[in-house]
Image (tube, rainbow, N blue to C red; front, top):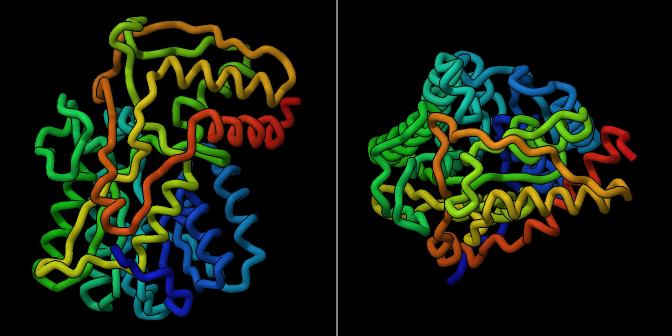
Length: 341
């Protein structure tokens, strides 16, 4: 196994740069001296203050250029490619969230389908060395076979969000085939960490606790058949992406898809207990959530579990940060950021 290390002489275009993963990836590349062009529309799907706080932390880097804009604006995207001539594009801009896609389907088509199409078109007219884009573990739907492997059948998405991500994989494959665009899709598995997304369960549970409200757990209160999730700490995700950037697919059709997950699913209740423990340490007092159990929501799946063999073969990396370590970093950050001591 040999893979090329990060090329710091290249221009990196990162969409969704004010987002959770986009921020961490931009920061890591900038710290190594790369030139990064970040795009984000700073939408208000969750607290925009957090997005601005992330951008503030990127401002001091001289090689960082930020453009406020929407990837669904094709004219703007073409101009950006023409002006900055990115060598490597990482598309992390997307409307996220499974449940939100049931209430607001339009924004998913706008961002995840039209926006991604615009990026593919831009890569077609301004050829790039590598297009890396976010897919999602949600493409596996309610597959029963675990761990999920990239070769599994994924034609039965159970949410519109999942359907848009599966569409991205198909569109990227077509463009790789027609225009020889090297493209790699990444199926992320439940990413968490400091400065994360407030719409994610761990963040929401923490908000609810400090607001004195009960948390809702959508598993029917059924501990025998609890939900399992492959929780992946953000640093592991970023490490996986970074290793792939200079290693585009070399197959006849230069197109690949990889899982990036922790490969060790945790029961949701274990995750919640660990969050209680880490918040107890961060605050110096015993934290116990008031729990209300409800039926599973439409679009939710009982288990996510990543096989990471392909990623390991390609770039010699496997996520390994435990939920104890990862959630402690989140809890410490949260308590400090929101002044909850």
